[in-house]
Length: 413
Image (spheres, rainbow, N blue to C red):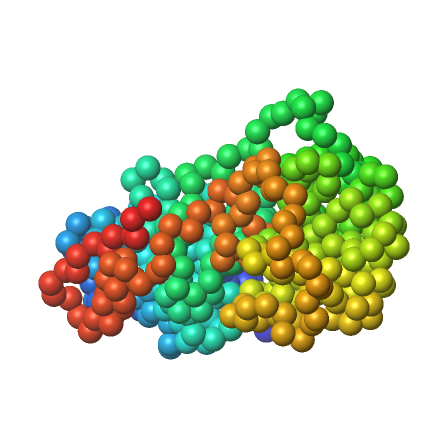
């Protein structure tokens, strides 16, 4: 007859064996992505998807040509799959990733819930906190369109990590495969400088390291903590700060730093062979003495110009009137303001013409895309067309099954 100790030991072993057998099932239980509030002509992993059902992490939802699915992925967040759409969901409620395999997906949120839409080459998500509405459509040729109806949307190329922001009210077209920078013979592109230091920066989409040469047509981007310093030949110094995109060009005999977004500082040693160009202003030293000035194109499209040492000359494009920014001063120009009302015009500059500008060696990034800009991200239209309207109609639909919605068409390129 077993003692009490032996019986307790045997009981403990049985309990441990039961837990060991049951634990894998518990560990492997998929998380709930969200609850279905409307479904018609749709399946989940091949089985019928019913209204009031749930979608689990790892499951793929496919919507027929005349179908629609509306999913509550958080108490205030909804996603709509329109006709001819297929999406595989991962994650959990309030923190969802949706791999878009075909069709159109519309997303709506009211707070900080995370919802990331992925294609084979990009990921798309809201920027910042608060309300956001956007639509992503994957076309049959694998191009994608993104429409930002409310709030801003961040589009990130998964291969390089470069990120671009789509402003509210805009739509963008994304290529099927991000093109690699074209091969080029170095001798065909003039050397205009050398990298002194680099961290968190890329050149033409590739990681930028120190001691590399900078050529006419090179585009340098920095990330949220990035920075790069370039010495222009022979002596001027360019500092590229975080979240900045600048294109280096040499249209004639002068270096143009074409600033799309972010902040660039130019230390001119008296060579006066460089200027900073935005879509609105050309900024350069006002004399041949040493000077330092910085230009920042901000997220709201305002421009901050600061003369850190020496006077700066600011020419407004296309009006050709130049203004003087005295040393030690700075000016902030809103996007909707013409001229520089706080500065004095430089006499005789209203009719002056700058050296004719040659076309850049490669296309400049599309206006409206900020952060690390990308020459293949094309703004195709203002959002708010049939694609957005159809998606919002789907999001506004009531619960339960019933008649299917019509497919949402992305804005035409």
